[in-house]
Amino acid sequence: MSRKEDIERKTEEILVPIAQKHGTTVYDVEYVKEAGDWYLRAYIDKEGGVNIGDCVDVSHDLSDALDADDFIEDAYTLEVSSPGLGRQLKKDRHFENSLGLDVDLKTYKPVDGCKEFTGVLKAYDADTVTITIQDIDKIFSRKDISVIRLSLDF
Image (cartoon, rainbow, N blue to C red):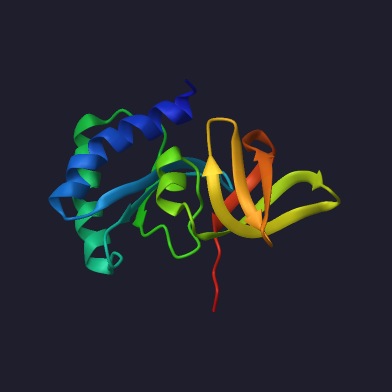
């Protein structure tokens, strides 16, 4: 496990009871470097969506817990937010909760001459994702998917 993955895993372990205390669930945690700065992002969710108060409450408690544990050596910015309407699907629990919903999928390399697909998430396993596009099931290797997220339909 990489240092980044270890930080994300340990942060999620700390975050779960904090999120539950505030009536929310953990959607995801990511530790990323952008423009030379580290960001620790915690995404929380709840039925009906989270509000700014939820994010503030969880952020304060998580910040205190992270300061007490002090396991992250780098300076970082902590962000707590909703995963948003067009949330990325990264983990099996994300796929499970999104079965039957419309998704946008992008691949690293063209598949049948195309890199972007929209369809209904039909199935997934450890290696593949299946979406239905115009009544045809298309199976993608998970390693070939650059991003998959819920479709935004306005």
